[in-house]
Amino acid sequence: MTKDLRVNADRMLASFNQLALIGATAEGGVNRPTFSEAHLAARKWFREDIERAGLEFHTDGAGNHSALLPFEPSNLPTLILGSHLDSVPNGGRFDGALGVIAALEVLRTVKESGIKLNVNLEAIDFTDEEGTLVGLLGSAAISGHLHPEMLQAPRGGRDNLVEGMQRAGLSDESMLSAVRPQDSFAGYLELHIEQGKRLERAGINIGIVSAIVGIWSYRLSFIGRADHAGSTTMDDRLDASLGAGAFTLAAREMVMKDFPSCVVNVGNMDFAPGAFNIVPARVDVSLEFRSPDEEEFKRLDAALLLLANTEAIRFGLELKYENLGNHSPSLMSDKVQRAYVEACDDLGLTHTSLTSGAGHDGQSLADLCPVGMIFVPSVNGASHSPKESTKWDDCVNGANVLLQAALRLGT
Ligand code: GLV
Ligand code: MN
Ligand code: MN
Image (cartoon, rainbow, N blue to C red):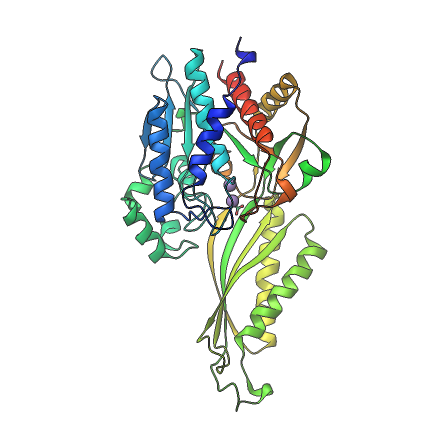
């Protein structure tokens, strides 16, 4: 009976623990930015684990790594399950890794069961979900949403992208060649940790995602004038740090007051020349903001750029800005959400509907095929930190929901 099928929790834990050793940090997390040595080592391990499982291995021009479990006839569309093995700098063991390990375990379980499906199954590790280089890169590549200009001005910098691609044996051309025919997609399912506190606080097993926020990124440059930090009077300075600092504070206030469903983040400031005794001539600000709604995004975008300009003028500075990529918000498929609800009910797991404030690869695919995600509780909501943790029973619950939803959608 397919309804009785369950993942092998011990085997999944063994794989999870082996993977967590790759790029492990002293604080208990992992450091696997895209195309770093540790990231490439994790991908090599994944390939070996796929082969140990007796599954077909596949890679593409975007560097995505996959396990394949094909069925007959040969032209079936593919139901993709997965997540990502890259991490943010000094990240946690669960973000992305859990979804890849669970996807592979689902394929192993289905293969062992001998069940025949009406779709091929694929367990994928998408390239650069986290945006070290571009963000949602592998999923944008297979879905046809990757355009040459996105590779020319990526948010991680063109030089880092080129260097990384060289290390991985990839190129702009190969990236763009990874696009798949639309009719090859039967759907995309992902298990992920919640990265927030809602499930833990409510004591609920599974979150079924209704929508994923969009993410827009900019580099803002506040440009003033380098001067002697001792002999220039305070009123005679064109100090770029004042524009950057005032913008950061004002952006927070504006978003909290006028855009309550959005968030804004200044993740980095780069000072030039960057010395104790020189008035900052230029500050480059890494700006990211998120919204679940496309129209609100446009209003927030305009409001933030106006604010940056206002603060620049206030301190006599010039403002330059460069857009470094827009990922649209996405609604998740009703059909996939229903499959998750039925799977949770059959497994006796409590569930709730929630939105994702984190970006995920599903948003690249949501306009091509049915996409749906589930979350499992994050201990203390910690994420993008070595403190990231999810109880193993919760991880197994999530993998079983993923398995049962895949069976529902694939039979
Ligand atoms: C990815 O985890 C993101 O939301 O930044
Ligand atoms: Mn993730
Ligand atoms: Mn992440």
